[in-house]
Structures are given as structure tokens and as C-alpha cells.
Image 1: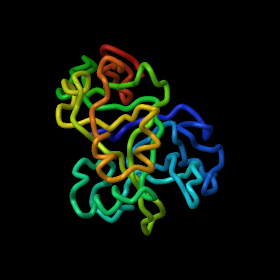
Image 2 (image 1 turned 45 degrees about the vertical axis):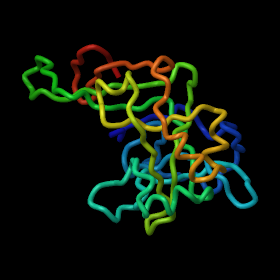
Image 3 (image 1 turned 120 degrees about the horizontal axis):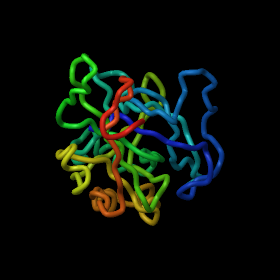
Image 4 (image 1 turned 90 degrees about the vertical axis):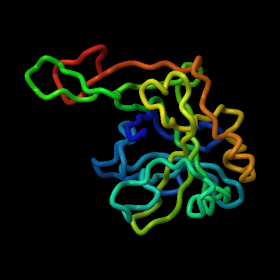
Length: 215
């Protein structure tokens, strides 16, 4: 499932957010929201006290390292541990992205004498250069952590990853995700229109030689 994404930008006014940060921006070299991987920190949009909407910095692991693997994506919102978060507007967030990746189902022989490997397919939204992904967050021992909410895969994503895709929101639905009832947000857990998306790849960023695209 989606464990590689990018956000090409800086905190700004997006999806009704103010330009302020709820927490101070990290100053270490390991903070790179343009290249999002599990347990990395990234910008998210959430609402604070009094409905004040702004930016925060959180790690992409809603369990904060308490499980063997990072919990980056959640689909079964009805399960008690997730419903507890999903039904509370203060625990919901938007994750701004420019594109996200899924690995190819099969490995590719690049003809370079090295073992075959899977390539990355990068998906973007043609009618939203920066799009919002539905998510929720919670405080953890390691600081605030978030997860992206997934849904059924659309016709573009399904050939690469048939099980699920991240829940991409239309701009007019962002307010509902952050403020609506539990039933309201469950209705938004739908695949994005495939005709409004594009894909490139496969790319092989760990190899000099690539097939079918470049990173």
C-alpha cells in the first residue's frame, strides 16, 4: 500500500488552512516533507481549538513506533481502535500531496546484471496539482503521528495495486472531512475519479538504468 509520496511545496493557504504552524518547524536535516516515507515527518492540516485551521508537523506512523511496522494506512474505520479517532473531528487531518507511488506487481530485469526489482509507479491528480488525502492523527510517545485513510482502488490504480488506494478528497469535501459526522466521512471513503488522474513509470530510483520512465 502507499508508503511513498511527495509534497512539492511549503506551508501556505491550502484547503482553508492558515499559513501558521501549530508546532515549530524542525530544523534538522532529516526533515524532508518533499520525500515522504514511513515514519518520516511531514506537514499535515488540522483544526485546533476554536476551529482554527493550520499546519502541523507529524510522523507518518499513527502508532508512533509501537508496532513492528509503521501504521501508515488504515481502511477499516469501523474497528474500535480506528473509530475512536475517526469519529472525533479534532483527530482528523488532511495530508497535502503532489503525487504518490505504488510498486509494480512484477519485478523487472533491467539488463544490468543485477537482480530484477519492482519499479515505482507515480500517480498524480490532473485537476489538483496539490491534492488532500483523508487522514487522522493522535499523540504518541514519539510525538504526533498520522495515517492516511484508504478505499477501493479506481481503474487507474487497480492494475498496479488492486487492493486499495489512498482516499483523495475533492476541495469541496475537505471541510466535511475535518468537521463532519462519522457517517459523513465514511461516505467520502471513495476512489477518486480515474479520468482525473495520471500515472508515470515504472521508475527505478536505486538503479542507473530505468525502463519506461525516469524519476
